Length: 219
View 1 (cartoon, helix red, strand yellow):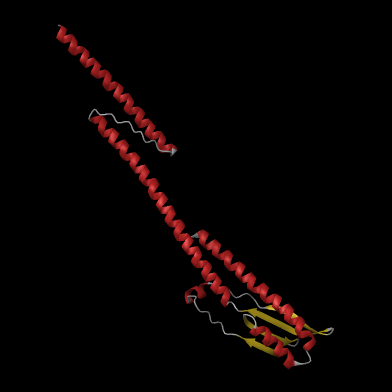
View 2 (cartoon, rainbow, N blue to C red):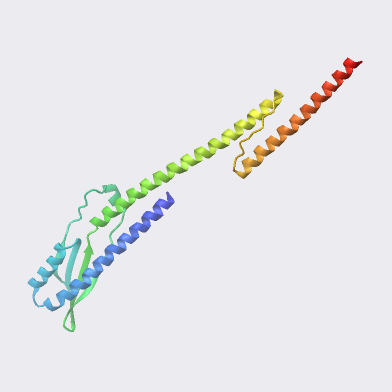
């Protein structure tokens, strides 16, 4: 979950920077285009409208140096295909990019361009879904791997239990399946070693019993 959040935060930061950089480039380009048109407001509005309609922008605002508005275009933020809960949780509103509009040697005003976040929200939502799918797959693999490891451990423990029970019945089972895990491997080898020693003791006892029985028959 932590890795998922880190990856998504990185994607969100990259997307926000990309949105701002795109707005900054448009603001600089549009400010250069408006410079020679400052004496004709209708022409400036036409230029702004052409840029606004040809791209994805939340707003483009042109103000004079005294702060009074010259022209403003705004597009309502409507994003289809992305859950409202996701939109509430993800803050993707970078500041508007600004550029100075020059009229000859003087400053006419300031142009502010704010990119429309719709396409970037959709991109982030798709990234989030892919990360979730990847997280589920990796989580499933981790669970399956843990299950297999646990199963191998239980099988080894079960075989050692059978070895111990067999000794009580004077049966000696040698475990041929040696685990790769160092700790469990040592336990299995130690158990096999113990079984061999007990079997040797048992065999010597049988030989002694057989010897005494033969001596009794001779007498």
